[in-house]
Length: 47
Image 1 (cartoon, one colour):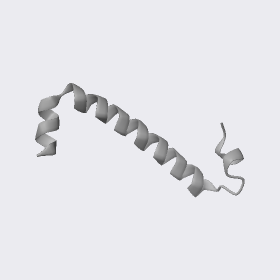
Image 2 (tube, one colour):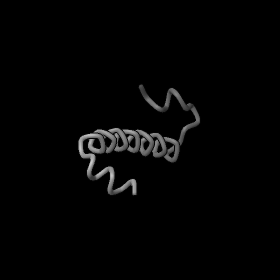
Image 3 (spheres, one colour):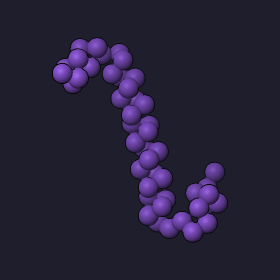
Image 4 (tube, one colour):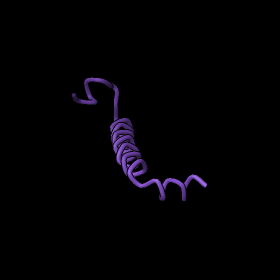
């Protein structure tokens, strides 16, 4: 899957945003997994 095909007029900024979004989603997914495994940390940050 290439961003160029999804966005014919896509430039560097568009590709950069796609990259940031993908990394952010992956980071949140990992953070959520850690969050669930460590209730004490979750309680500390949620307070």
